[in-house]
Image (cartoon, rainbow, N blue to C red):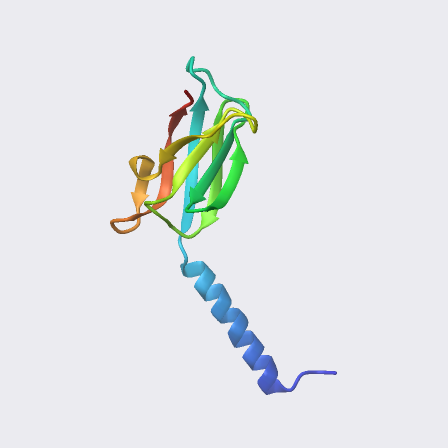
Length: 119
């Protein structure tokens, strides 16, 4: 059964509004390299972004110690990167702002990049 034209237009407006809002939200890029205590690439290290009590993203480093992930929206300067050699090892913690290469205002970040050496 076809929709009445008015209901169809309303759904179209809602979808267009949702796409517009998503397109306006800037992306966050986090990239870097994990090194072990001897400065060698740390493959399969666990890398996660924690904002308060919530883990916003988690990934693993590749064979060369590199990692990269993209998220929707900026993150405040209170967030930290947590990196561990593996899931059984405690996380080392880095505040994001010293590694922020693209700020969003005074207290937020859109891009994080760096070399992170594990203890």
